View 1 (cartoon, rainbow, N blue to C red):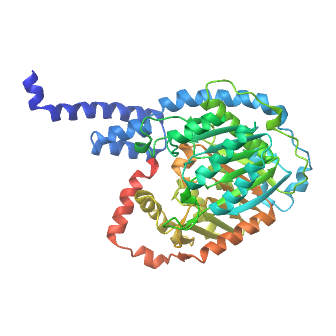
View 2: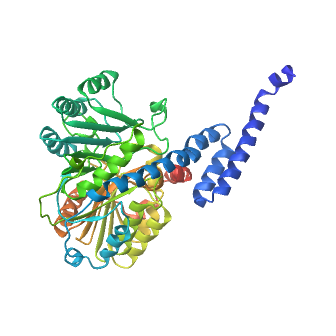
View 3: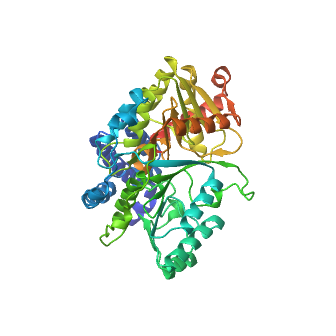
Length: 484
């Protein structure tokens, strides 16, 4: 028997592999998930023995999601009840706010019914272009904190900018300021020395869903991709800029990093606070105390209407994707969209095609060179169908563009953490600010048009005649796109 096993070990392993693969295929079919995603998993399981099983058990299993995020959803509901009395906003006539929005009012209605995405009215915002601008403002605000600092980041490293930020919060904590830090265990990298310093300074820090080998799980599912900073419940930050030297153009980086972040002062910060608290309650072992100081009265009469849209595997609806889709469908003049990864679902592709064909000026800005080979070619696989419909596709060539923004018709814009891909729409935790304001939309539009000066517009005929090798790479990457 032992001799037989030794002589046929690979055959036995292969049979065992396909028994597990068949079981996995049956499980996938019974889930009735997206057909393209189903086919992608089945192809990987059949044509890539052993490797296919690793991919499926790392990325396709739902038992962890069901167990963990059912618990998080319950926690969210409890937090909603606890903070509901604090989410009281100064009332203005809804009609006064929505003047000039036309059909964009549907966007507000889409999320307004959700107790997690109320429309906030008394806000002022600053659109922050690039990490160096974001950190200048953020570090100033952190130094001025008087009550609490709440930070939630996908990437935070103790490099130059990260150490400067963490040194400030350590000093504030020693002064008696409450500091809470939630960081994603896959995206972030903090040394044991820095963790010891945080601990000794009284900073509460917790990793989001710890993993054993973070360096080997860069694309593992259900990561917290949000970037949130809250100071005293009055000032909030959200956008694409993580805490790392890679995001700061200080001369030390080999590549120019173009990104966009948002600073909010006003009522919308209360909603950011709510989402921070639900995550904190999920990642910590003890019940969270909801303090009145987390939701101070905002003595400010701003004129920027904002909704905070959050999405993740614990939400019933893909809120951010639906908001983007609704904005595209209701555009009349133009759609200017920036994303580092363009691997969307068929609904977004079709909506952009239709908008362009009916005369809307649709411009898409993506990086010329990506930080991911497979994401680059998966993105490229979607471009020909857009170009054919008249969409103008521009590729940023000054460096890497990481901004995630959309501006429509001078009245609506969004800045946040959500990429246009399956991972952001359905797998990771994301958060965007939806802004209903003419001035801010025009400002973001001007940033977009400035970025086009450092971009090349793809010619449809030239693109259609690209090499067969390029098309083959795109077709290969496209097979993996539902899993990216």
